Image (cartoon, rainbow, N blue to C red; front, side, top):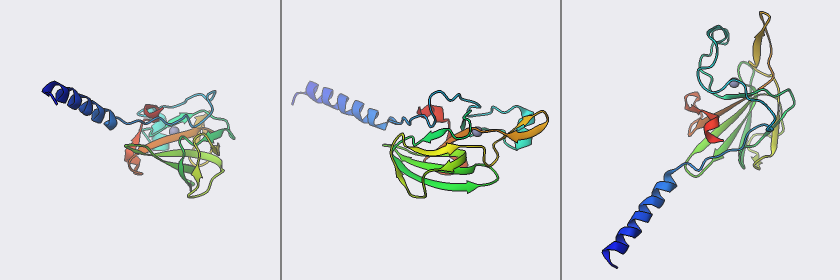
Length: 171
Ligand SMILES: [Zn+2]
């Protein structure tokens, strides 16, 4: 093999390896397309709200979904169901194993889960209905009232809350 052929071959091999390292990570939107997005990932709460709810950093993406809106599995994967009265309310965690990354997708403040712990679901399958359970509240006329929405959180390679990343980066 001449040196040029060798060089070209190694160039393409390097290129291919580089591509493999890229995260091929797209998940589908967790709610129907007509549902509007609310508060985004990051420091988005006004200070007075942050103080009330004790949370300055918003670790997920909110969707302004009326109670009973279907939630879709973002990939074919395993799900788990939990209940946390104080914060997330009834919530489902979908463990999405992609080529180079594991994403834990949290569907929070649900009204009803259609899956149980350890279920294998298909991409796009309706796994729950949105609600306002847990801390899904907002200020209205000086009072905290129910605020139906889906809080969708994506944690990368860990279930620690500090592993939360912007879900929109994966859609
Ligand atoms: Zn939220």
